[in-house]
Length: 179
Image 1 (cartoon, rainbow, N blue to C red):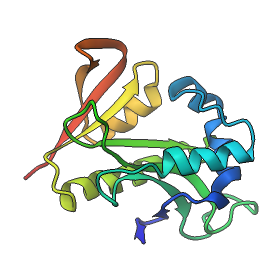
Image 2: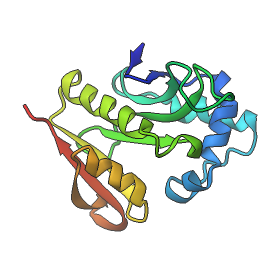
Image 3: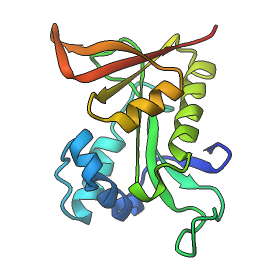
């Protein structure tokens, strides 16, 4: 199992349906990632099986559920093993290297979990997958996500180019291996 200081990371499974339903229906997910048409728990199970667990070229790729590794100091209703977000590495056909992605339940944003998880997966990409560069795509309106990427050392490359057309809204960021 993969873990960092306060979190551990595991593959999504059908028992995550309620968490996934909540996450993909948060206003920020809908605004910055898009509507995945998950309107009930059955849709969430289908989204887990067909999207989150979609085949990637390497078994270590894919989004992982970020869970609290201990009873953090967030109150009585937060327990160890609580899923708080998704983070991981993806191979997208339109990029020549892997991409990092992340999303967290609003309640857990601003507490350092996003930077912790993204740092873990960035390090994993460079140290274990031996990639030379790591991409991140983000809507230019998503200032919180852009701030996180910049804290991680990602640099703005330009609009995402797909089918020889540069996007005005989807920004491409990159981080290079130190090796």
